[in-house]
Length: 156
Ligand SMILES: CC(C)(COP(=O)(O)OP(=O)(O)OC[C@H]1O[C@@H](n2cnc3c(N)ncnc32)[C@H](O)[C@@H]1OP(=O)(O)O)[C@@H](O)C(=O)NCCC(=O)NCCS
Image (tube, rainbow, N blue to C red):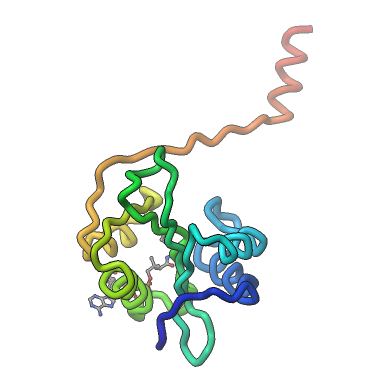
């Protein structure tokens, strides 16, 4: 198993596949191949991956200049951290995050966001001394055609 920086945009496709597999194909936080390529060419971001026999099994992005509305400028933002579902629970995520925190950025503070329902992931981060300090919510909105028609009918 080898953790290293990914600076070759040719990995974008493999990274997008790992990301959609890790987060689920219909999940909101997935990042497209196009956006991955953009980030690899942008000094603001660094991508780090974990490879087993040259196959990418997990990766994350470190945002070095996160938006001030997201977190403090002194913190680095960890984003899109995911491991292939069939390799989860084997210690890959632990090794990759340890590599980031202890080897690449030993003197830094970090920020990240987690889906509130992912309790196992939250406890995973607590093992690295991340603490939970707040929570935001997503509001799901839907325009239902049937309801719309019923309303029209009601007002006629
Ligand atoms: C979150 C995620 C990246 C973690 O990667 P992973 O490879 O599954 O994690 P690991 O196998 O390293 O760790 C799993 C467990 O083993 C523990 N572990 C693994 N290796 C360990 C070691 N060497 N020493 C101590 N504990 C270890 C972890 O702390 C964790 O324990 P927990 O289940 O009690 O929390 C991965 O599960 C994932 O991709 N999830 C879906 C996407 C997602 O939600 N990403 C997070 C976005 S914020």
